Image (cartoon, rainbow, N blue to C red; front, side, top):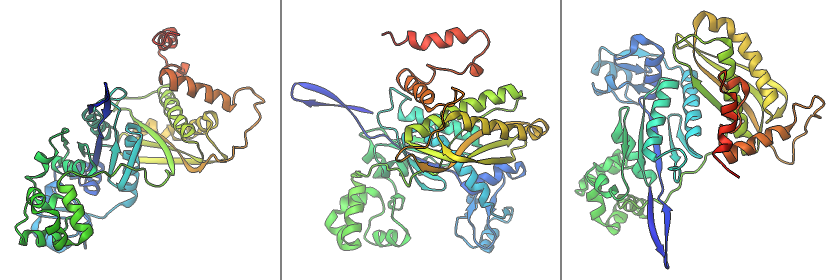
Length: 414
């Protein structure tokens, strides 16, 4: 999303804001349908006394979140009612946000199942906003097994409305310059922050669409809704939303994962995947100036059940070697279960994160291997020449070593 502005005699390319709003569809219910194949395609209600979530099959009958359980069952007598499993939802959310963190430099988590991503200026690096959004939806479906809807626009407000319009399991891009044409025909209750009470008040004054609200005028809205509320809604109806995507609280973990498909995997193949994931996580930690103490291995088995194993190190670190050694021990311990049940996803994470402030006590490199300078040099080369500039031998196919090591530097002549 680029536009050209003229400064004196020069033309300068200025990147327009490019914001994605990602929202998991019927999150709790989708997790239940993912984990129990018997629920797929059937109406599902999570929660008995009060509806915490309803699948789209149940929503078609009129069931909504926060509805009383008795009324929901009357409206949808064929629905399957399941008890909530919050640990499963937290784990699924963590896996999805690991994918979002890989896709954008700035991710603002709004809730357990939705986030804003700022992908401004990434066209030449990872693709257009639409390409990034399509890749995200594919990755979340393949690696976590959940549907996710994404809206793309130049502002947070329009991106959020677009993701709602894309549901279920869709993608909607609002191109620059078309924001008002998209917004104004929509019902006013689609606006972020317009609840039932505000909707009724606006409807009583003939304001039924966002276009009606934009034409009503700021002064009239201030009289109806007060100074702050009136000004805010009038600005949003005119697509004036300068809010930037901001990181939330400092992250408490760094992680990465990879879907492996349904085929059999040898221990050597799993180790190669483990090495690649560990390299990625530790590089991101060092770039962020963070160190961690607890190492976590996550496995999704062939039957879609999951397991996590963790070990806490004697001291927090951002060095690759001790973390990889710990993950290899955890993977060996999980190998019998993997051989029996298969594996479809492997993930790694480092938690108990701390700031690397004031320096970190380093171990003396008596063996000449575990020195932080080696990690720093590898990071610097990859930052300058790309992630493939240096590769571990374990990640290379036989006969490809020479080509893989030479080609990245051939692309960057001195």
